Image (cartoon, rainbow, N blue to C red):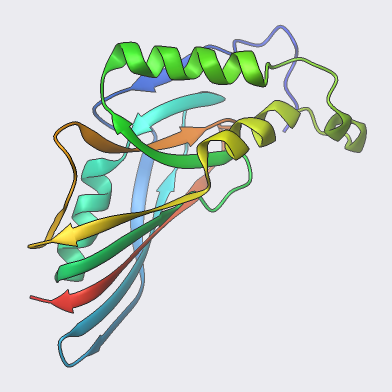
Length: 173
């Protein structure tokens, strides 16, 4: 996707939900005695090029559908210009994170990646800084987080449909 240098590159920062969430798809559900392995895709089309949005509730819904009581929840951005991370859902912190990322990998520089005809070199670098996946503990059928911890999807080349993988594995309820 090509962006004009004059394009609006402001960030969508949402500490409480995921604007652009489209649907989920159960990919697999394997149950063997008390063990369950459950995989879903979450489909999003973030309405801006850049975004930090809270997907905790969407991941928790996958966990409920999995019926895993104790285990682990793996979340992957499944794209090289997006990431996932755990942090506080505070709007000032989201502004700080977006400014920090933009300072380290600013839009509009002449990245070597642009010699391929792309213009999203900054998106690849920002993705590298946020990680492509995370693993969260599951206890008593809930994400077992500290008081302020939430799961965020970080989009750096939005305006098109992408998938987030959520894989839950553990002991069933």
